[in-house]
Image (cartoon, rainbow, N blue to C red):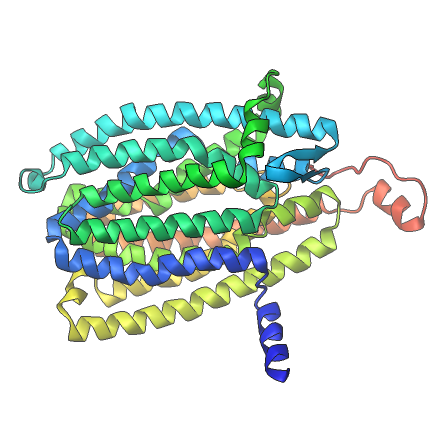
Length: 469
């Protein structure tokens, strides 16, 4: 009994509920499967192939310029509507009819938006990427064309189902969405490994993405068929929802596009200026660090729907306590993971040839330290966006432009190491700016209003002022 009590206490202290536990299963799979993928790529691919493999995904990351960061808007707006709804059998919505209609309109808008983005990925990014890779000197020695187009097609298909999962996440179905993502990651990972071992080369990435799409379709058809029908059955206009969403969305779009410049420019830039082999070392190192960051931010991202509900209900003290706790947990997990990863990498570099497929230990340490610092900024961003506002827009733009300029200049003069130094220096500069905006906006938005005072005094309430909800 005492052992069970101690285990429960530790899980509670770490903030692990059922939803987060399932998210962590998926993230843990990615984290633990990452070394296997790295080992297979390091032993089955040539260095130029490794560079193409990692740069494929970064070029496809340009889809953020087509999605315009809609995922965050869907999560936040859906969470506000779902505060007055609940799910019945097979995902059918019940509750306040006005909220139900608004959520359905949001869903229909999202499905159309992502369908257009999928078409543009296929035609725009597909052709642009083909021209980009065709121009590299290593292109003649690597069989990349079929793998590239298979991956582009599978990515476009995946975009068709993603808005449904974002809406479900906004409806606080964290556990269900996490279970799907864990299953999709596992299936995709196994297909990727099998494809590499079977000699599929760069085709393996496309096979893995296609497997993920099939899992998504099967899961939605089996568990959330009623919810999908709800969204498709909406026949009303969506213009009103777009007008309401757009003031938040255009800011999120600029922030999302800035995110590409901040986190996804490394491999394409190194590929262009220093070749596929060095881009592969950059990609391998970034995969290791990014796995740590993605795992840690789970403590924050899984609480985003809860943040939105607490804002909607005006429970700001509870919001502050929850946000503070998950931020501390995310930073702690990332710090422990970063130190462990660096120790392991140092050992690998000494004892195995695979260590040469990574950047130097100092460059990886810079990336890892920045990942720990960024957990604080991620927590601040999720907190503020729960108010259906995006006050980080200008900071995101500044961060993106400075990072892009630094990465390009650093790579041009010093290669991948220069890119890492520029990235770390920019994030260190931006951190106090972001924290300042967070403190100002939190104080401004949570300032007690006349309605708050009447509520405390037990008098009649009125519409809460100064609250962007």
